[in-house]
Length: 250
Ligand SMILES: C[S@@+](CC[C@H](N)C(=O)[O-])C[C@H]1O[C@@H](n2cnc3c(N)ncnc32)[C@H](O)[C@@H]1O
Image 1 (spheres, helix red, strand yellow):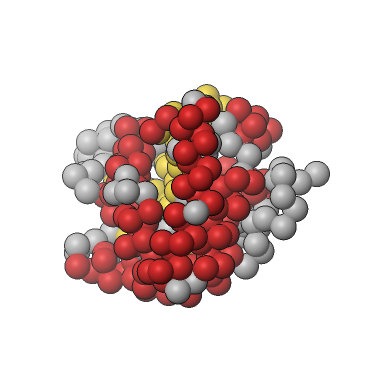
Image 2 (spheres, helix red, strand yellow):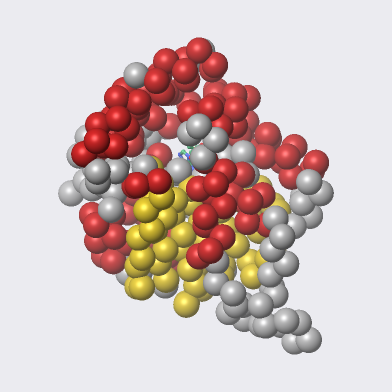
């Protein structure tokens, strides 16, 4: 049984769309979220565990975390998490969209983070890592785009260490009826219009709207996380529910 209301979503090759809008992706994120997207990614920091699950001798018990960011795109999550964080020893980002990764790598080089972060071209449904490799696995605005939601979650579960944390940041829908209505109008009109004006790609920004509408957010998503084996599932709504962070443990 599919977990999505719309059987056409997500598009199995949505990453190709991201490849084509890559040069404008960061700019459009800032414009369309009215500057909030970086703050939302920053909010992930409060859910990072302050511990290393396999501490190394002679180091602070908090040092040495290895993290993975799935659907990393232009690496904004990794850049945000690594800022002022001395606990992260190594970070990996995966995404099938090469053009997004290329922009991410340029940003990492400017910030001199290219030794700490490795970016790989890979699919969320087939993560190229052994079981129990990571203390923390994140995905931001990406789980909505993977062709098989459950398979991607199972893969994220598989590569997380026992006791490790999975953090999922994704768009959701506000509960307040007024905000919900304004949000719907904004998604239907401004997002495709502004997206088209800046990227020339109407399809990509109509897709954004449709994929947000179709995504199983809130309690339904928590239920899916539970079914996939996650425990201690927490839901943290941002800006009245426009986006949500789901924090769960293996
Ligand atoms: C909205 S962007 C999010 C990028 C980044 N995480 C961020 O916060 O800006 C969605 C990303 O999901 C990626 N994606 C699409 N299909 C994927 C898949 N099957 N596996 C992994 N990533 C995928 C796209 O290439 C794109 O970079």
